[in-house]
Amino acid sequence: MTMLHSDGTSEAGTTEAPARGVLKTDYQKSVAAYWNNNPNDDRVNTKLGEVDGLYHHHYGIGEPDWSVLEGPEATRQERIVADLHRLETAQADLLLDSLGDVRPGDRLMDGGSGRGGTSFMANQRFGCGVDGVTISEYQVNFANAQAADRGVADKVKFHFANMLDTGFETGSRRGIWTNETTMYVDLFELFAEFSRLLEPGGRYVCITGCSNDLFGARSASVSWIDAHYGCNIHPRSRYFAALAANGLVPAAVTDLTAATIPYWEMRTKSELATGVEKPFLTSYKEGSFQYLLIAADKVGK
Image 1 (cartoon, one colour):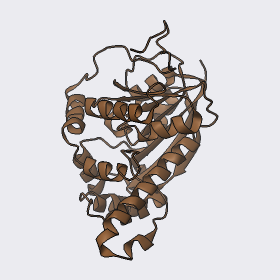
Image 2: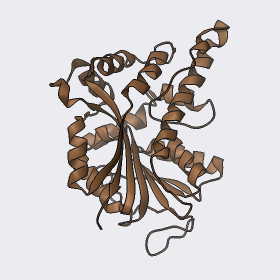
Image 3: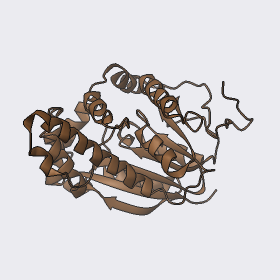
């Protein structure tokens, strides 16, 4: 059993989330049920994670190796899967690049941590403690088993907890990130919690898809994506309004839309394609949907 200090930190440097009501609304219960009962599109996540044991729940960026489509047909799908996994790992690397100066004694949090891929990458890169939070008990159990198998359970821990109300200590985080999870929550509530958790000068990094305010009304393709994942994609402007309202000042904003389109084009070649590829490509190319990285610093106390 891990011993806890009075401030909630463990001997490992991670933090135990206090027991509290996690699923606060019927919508949150439905989202949790989706991820608990589907390893649904998890068919994609599972196959890609099996490449090297690093399981992600997000998409990729960068130029595919189109040569994987050539060569023996018997192994073509295997080559496509390996390249898609390379691109999603590149996306996680870019997110971690944006966290700034993180040191081994710092503590990080992964909001909506899935099966833990980015958390393990953060621990390997920075040597620090990482806490992942997710409302899916299935994901918590999977990721904690991964941590044990990797021999890092003393540094990387996953919690059945709500990222809108984590229970972690105020000012306890040097960095926090969300990777394609903000479309399931209210941004003003989320960023209020993250602002509370971050130490002064700490950084929040978000990678997300958002609707483009300049396009006007929500496009049919964006609505299709919402329906597929049971989420509520926010307009770009709402991110910046919610950040500003909570003392989080953007340090960098990067439009990754052009960088993610090739990933989706390669996914159309995969046997793992789920049908969501077309609306993603349509919405990105017509300009109704954008893929952004936002890095924002906590100002004030």
